[in-house]
Length: 80
Image: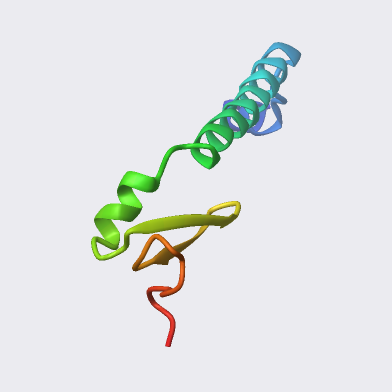
């Protein structure tokens, strides 16, 4: 059997598969933790920079905000 055929037919060892499994699981856990912190991050300073004419921001749903031109919440910005 030639060297090329031996390399083609070689299966990864159990140790390699275990390491790849641990790396994959760690990546999934890290993505979940990062997503959790980004979801709960304080973004109101960025909203104020995006809508400087807004006086008040109301959080409606996860990641959704309403911007009002006054603190009485009567004039919604961005709606026609």
